[in-house]
Picture 1: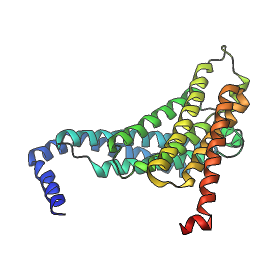
Picture 2 (picture 1 turned 90 degrees about the horizontal axis):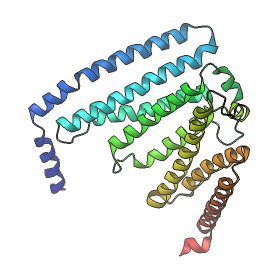
Picture 3 (picture 1 turned 135 degrees about the vertical axis):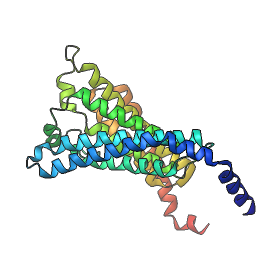
Picture 4 (picture 1 turned 180 degrees about the horizontal axis):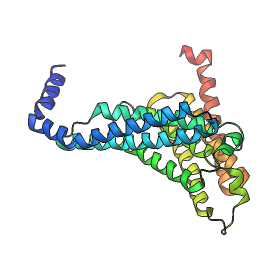
Length: 285
């Protein structure tokens, strides 16, 4: 215990008044920008409350989440200033605010496109019809910007962070958002090179698959290295099931077969683990 206290004291003493002053000075513009973003967000909130045309709500939500993305990036920048000016010390308060903002964005976007991932790929049709004016390029731009912000936060915290095992949930929710923001009906109907959004939709499609696969892998890693809880394997299966549905309607038979095999393997593992857990003889041992 004494050794820990000494280490903490050394860390605190290592930050001089000059370093603290440099941090405050270099982060001043970023903090001013944050105040501007807050004012802008409040303006949209007031307008949304006053507006009687509820069909505009999704567009107000999108405007506010883009402000939130800018806020996250600015908070990450403040952390970089802190690390540089204060001998590697992170701006923990700002990073935690940014981490919470990720969840706030996801919650807001779930109001726009839904949060369903277990049913069919067109279950949120009524919501997608309300945002037809948001074109495929704009949707992709938002998703890429949000992903960059998520990665920025995770990189800033580092792999040894106490939040390490909360990241799979964020990847999971982000993957569902990517899926629900995608119009599979339009993708199938306008799947030709003459369509101006052909390559944009292809990139969005790949984003869904790549991130769902990554979220599935993250939950398997969480199971192996942390929890040993079959609930995490079930989350992995849920992501793979999402991919299976997509491959099934797009006719990607090779990848469909591989995905089905992996799902079957994980389900067998879950069944075996839960059978062992519920076996009275195993418990006695």
